[in-house]
Length: 179
Image 1 (spheres, one colour):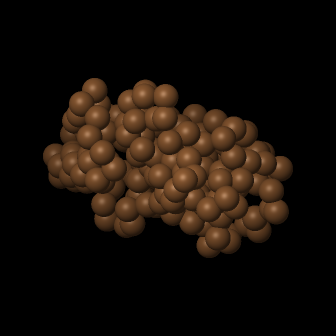
Image 2 (image 1 turned 90 degrees about the horizontal axis):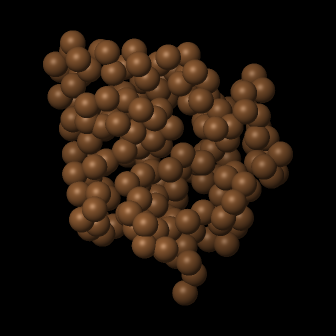
Image 3 (image 1 turned 90 degrees about the vertical axis):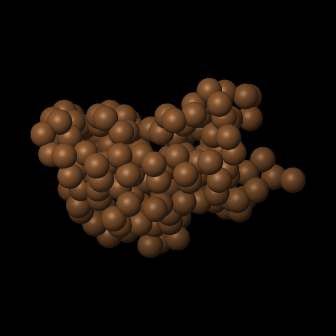
């Protein structure tokens, strides 16, 4: 049986090129770019070496990764966290995203060490836009309000032609290096 039963060998090769290393504990593709390549992978809550891993939706698309890194460098995470403290509706919707994330991970297995812990800073702060974007892409619009905002800020990152080997495109939009 394959180490990553939800990924085809071609998907495994693409994700390896995107990450610059083989993926660990990957269960499936959570979202595909319109070009057909994996852009978000679903990761098991416990890695093959036994390490608990709370990041269920792992963003792999080099252009989206670079765009999220740019947004993070512009202070978007702090701005979003500040808004959570003053906007009760936004905070409630973000807490619902946290619960949805936990429910999705529970379908993959229970890991007591990370019980109640999602990713990206949810539910009280924002510490990783990559996680929020990955969740929003995999779950679809309306599930993660701040993830949806990240995607809106990224724009249509997928409209640029994909290269045959994404490892050649490590610099994403405007030459911003991947995180």
